[in-house]
Length: 174
Image 1: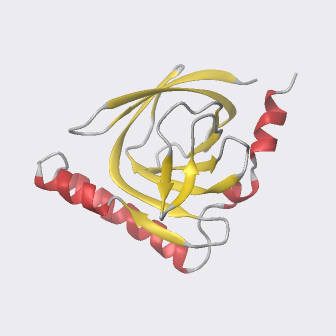
Image 2: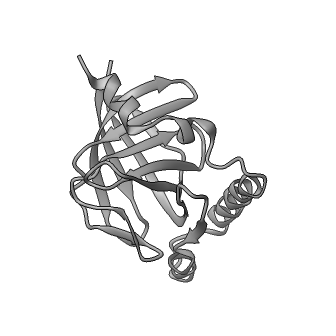
């Protein structure tokens, strides 16, 4: 049964965002959330629209992992790609969840083109003292894990490849 999740997302040295999602899959090793009607700023990656106001986003959360994966769409439902967000493992306290952004992200289009994002933001956060040496090691380890999977063609994980917006909406239907 879907339930609302209030997600608090902080960025060291920057803002704290609060987002409302519907938890539609709740397994011990996988949570899938749906956000309908994105109301943030448009996001362009490598010159192409990745997400825009009114869009729907799917978030794949793997408890204990140092990343989550977004499946991004435009407002008309067009799938644009997978956004891997390096972050602290999500803390789940009832219907309020929280995580801290670790700046570095990865983008992959449906045709397999991919790029690491925000490396400059990570370096700036390190220089400003917002990212400890210990946290840098976690970031480096997670990046290496994701990159090794990219190198052998196994990123993103199958669930993020196969589970579509339509599947999420079907789970919400009465």
